Image (tube, rainbow, N blue to C red; front, side):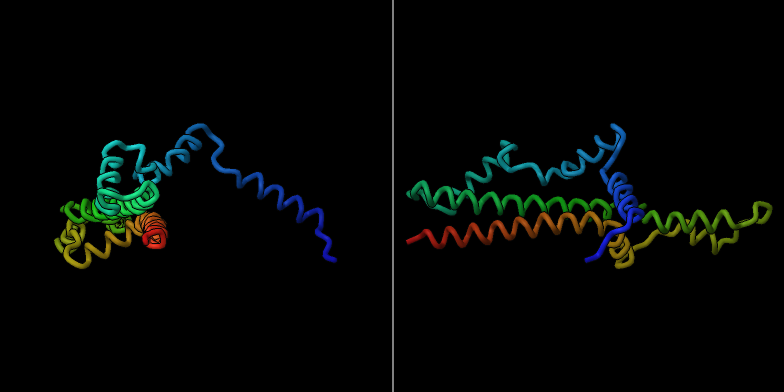
Length: 181
């Protein structure tokens, strides 16, 4: 039997106390808004417009003379499909807004340019080659790669929402198909 030392127990307790989330009111308020950043965690039925879309799509899926059970299953499919559309729209807006920005540059690249300029002696003129580097903006595939790299964390979160919606839709379609005669 393995006996844990008092020192290790105290260290574990100290780590646990430090891992309880934000301490300040500002930090707690910011953490509480994390799930609402893009609105994807909000249920479809809390938005009247989305609710109408779900109902219309469910009617198309189920047909005009469907039973209550079939309508409910069709609504389940429609909810997942509308959530999937929402996720894809947010992803499109995220990448597209950065792509359309002619001055888009990653924070890392901006920091590198500023550091390069700070290393240059103040009493010497800045050469034209360095000025070209400092004012250059990425374009084409380099810009897209930079955007995807910068937005990777947000895109990963959107991928999780998308996988959940796809999974919900798959199970809803299976249930719907199983209930059909």
